[in-house]
Amino acid sequence: MKLNSLTFMFLAVAFTTFAEQPSGPQPAAKCVKIDKTQQVLRAYEGNRLVFETPVGTGREGKLTPDGHFTAGVKLRMHRSLLYHNAPMPFSVQFDGNFFIHGFSSVPDYPASHGCVRLPLQNGNAERFFDWVDPGTPIDIIGR
Image (cartoon, rainbow, N blue to C red; front, side):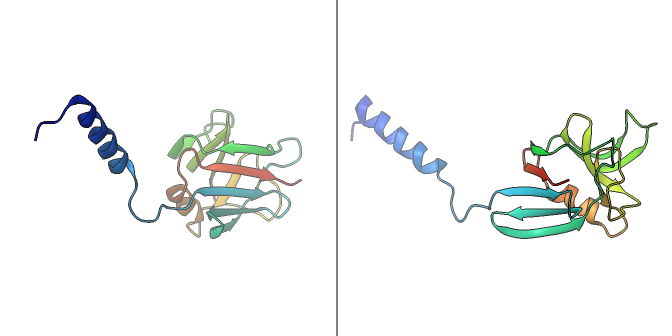
């Protein structure tokens, strides 16, 4: 059977369209909600809560910004450029010099220099770091 150019183009487009279709269920979109009033981070896949942890946000004069952000650079070990080379393990950038990162002390009130602290001792900082992807939406609300 001889194929003319129009038939060949049709088959090529049909095959490409078919090949690009994902098979099986697609993973639900990830998102992160941080509530500064409750001092809690919640991670979702679609509408399903998959992870929740207490956090420590910025204290008076060093507030964590409110807004809609996306996860940026992820660094297993980062050091602060602003605060005496302080270690910031399991860092996920969300806005300029603001990071979500592990910390040894996470009280139930705002105490950081503006970053969002996650507890190191229970593994939540590493768990969040491993779960979040660059580009994951992060919403921060509250007082």
